[in-house]
Image (cartoon, rainbow, N blue to C red; front, top):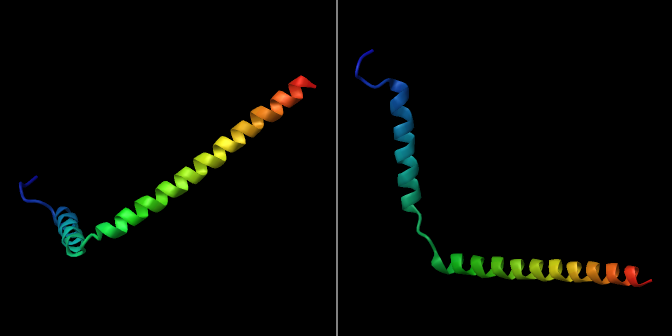
Length: 68
């Protein structure tokens, strides 16, 4: 039980530092991120519209069945 770190404990730290250096070398394109955000928002809006139409249709069909 010595106070020196084991060899296996040093390896994850070096891999972690390599990943940090690799991620810092890339630049973030904000225009690309904004474009992705707009596309995702359009998809969400479309999905919400479809879901709402399905819910209204289900309620209308249920109402028609009840009136018969």
